[in-house]
Image 1 (cartoon, rainbow, N blue to C red):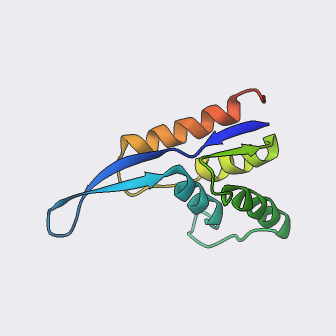
Image 2 (image 1 turned 60 degrees about the vertical axis):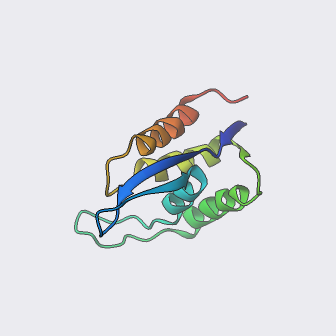
Length: 113
């Protein structure tokens, strides 16, 4: 079993009027977005998900909804998160996003407790 800490970080961005805005970004929201993303092929067409893949993702999504700041996951859950986060793409450069990705990679590579 591994423990996922649902951290948060501040991201700074400039809005359409040129004003700097700060937003609090949570690992939980980022992971949920990754789990809900439907993979695409090289031509941008959705390749869909099998029912088994959906079940795995739904199981992890349910665990994330526990209302806690930490989530206990088995190795299969961590692998699902890692694969989805590893495929995640972003439209901006942000140190917090790199740290999030690194954290998930380290969790995946770590030994279970």
